Amino acid sequence: MIDRTHGVSVTRQAALLQLSRASVYYTPRPVPTGDLALMRRIDELHLELPFMGSRMMRDLLRGEGVAVGRTHVRTLMRRMGITALYRRPRTSHPHPAHPIFPYLLRGLAIERPNHVWAADITYVPMARGFVFLAAIMDWATRKVLAWRVSSTLTPDFCVAALEEALTRFGPPAIFNTDQGSQFTSSAFLGVLQAHQIRISMDGRGCWRDNVFVERLWRSVKYEDIYLHAYETVSAVCAGLERYFTFFNTRRPHRALRGRTPDQAYFTSRPDVPAAPPRGSVLIPAA
Image 1 (cartoon, rainbow, N blue to C red):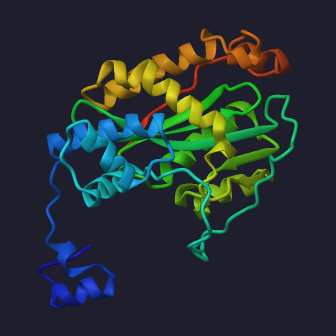
Image 2: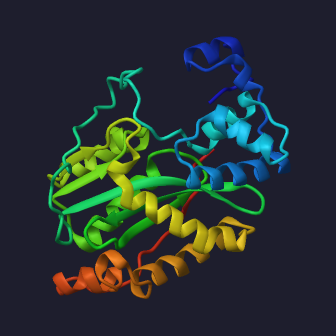
């Protein structure tokens, strides 16, 4: 965007684009190896104790012999998209361009496929580096309908997963997410509204409102991601492809009385062909 040979100065070009002048000269650097190891441990602790904020996380890490300050922990948690999950007073207001919808699932009996879908994003550590994973799940049957991996937290990979799920399985009655900017973006909401799907959003900090996807992340990480320490993004995608096929077709669930998600889903929807969800990598353009 910045043309250094143009007659307009770089400072003026940055101002016109509403960019920080310092960012024009910034050269991206890889995340240090020590930070990657620390982020992996923060991710593990967050799964175990999701109520921990940066202060408690720092103290727990220090108790494990890791010398780290609260500011650095907070920076890494922000980079990972992790926040402490607890009920809190309303301390901020949504951006006017990102509407927030009420939570529609409280007290609702959800007993059939395609009644309610849910979506969420999680941080996925690799041996060197990290990516983000978005998944669409059918609430009643726990079936993972679609998923995508991305190197950044932009809405496009969430939209791609949503469009695949809608194409393959048809629209649900209700779609539930948290209030993350990816799900409140016009691109994501526009797809839901075009299919006349009722939109539901969790309360701020109310992780239990989307508890089934939270449980999915725990299963994915402890049963696959943490066991393999994938080296590349393509290896992550191949591993997730195998895991989600196993999760849908072979892994029994107590909540489904020992059935697999595919058994629970396709018993009620014989019109839909059974096939594993397909994931892909979206590398944002520079």
